[in-house]
Length: 551
Image (cartoon, rainbow, N blue to C red; front, side):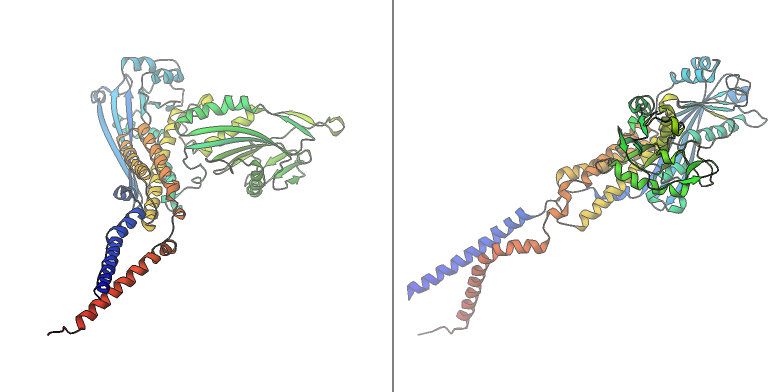
């Protein structure tokens, strides 16, 4: 009898020991080893980026040549002036344009440069005297009677970051008239509210955007440019094009200038038997075939299926197609919406590329020796493609008054101030992209609690937030170059964090699948322990109800 009692007591102690070990040691250990690790994120900083208050500061220097100002106003130099203009795009997005203008007299070397015979020579000489600061502009004011500018020209806009203007004459305040004209020049050479609004198209209602907003490519870390020669009739045309020399002479200088903006890769290909997706209409009056403006959208899709570059590219692809029409559809011309022939015989598609139709002069049928050798005039072709390339990057000429003389960018295809205009818009667009990416990431992680947040992912998020904030501060300080670099780093870090493989929630089991895995593991162990505890509780209750025997 005593042995049975001892055995029962030992069983109770063993059951209680197992239960205690399972609850005190096993359960916390299992909980700790199976919990989802989530590093802390700067949610406050991400939330602050949701409200973008841009302040874009443009440093402007106005330099007066000798004799440009009357004596009384010349003595007011030097001085500084600041103008601000705020535009509210929506409750969470605003743009403040700040122009910090300094007025001073020309130095001896600047005066000597302005005394040259040609304004182009003066522009080149003044470049050596200026600080090569991205986003900064310099306006040189010369006397009204100066022979530096051609007759009838009031303002000369050079290839770099400076302009030359005649000093307006009148009985009123000359400095006030100069300030108004300088503001007009700055609007032409720097950003405008419309260009910044277009860069923020994802945050602005469609009714506030212009018709050309969707034409330029979105900001990206890299672009791939593909030149394709389409020869649908190789039996009739033996087409030769020196694309390597053409790219080296026309496109590469332009891309070298844009090297600060993104990375570029260029390739080319020749596609045979690649026809357009529409049949051109024959025009009896001109004995030619016509592609109307309404049929142009249907041209791209069938041709794009043959290109194949966009399917394997990590970056946006710009396609430029040179199409040599079939002999039976030659000559082929493109008409605009008004029915007039397009001078370049080319068209471009927003955020895709451009197509140019290259007609071939065919000899009489009885004298034709097929295939006819065709040597493509690459100068004419690359001029068209380069113009389309500028439009696809949002580099378009602003409307200027007749008295403005705009210097050609030369063989580089891009002036310094046009590069600055692009950097202003790309910096703002990059910051807005980072804000959208990080906000989406924070919402995703907040919604799905079992996604692992590694330390390296959190580090990228912190770096993206810090870089975006730095870019905003640099924009407000007028440091365009450092602002763009900071915005670029913010984009890289935000994309690394957002597309990190560890954030894919499909790699982690939902709760119901966790139960399906853990129940077969814990149930065989938990049932005996629970039953033993229930038995111990029952025996304890029964022992309390039994009366105590007394002698």
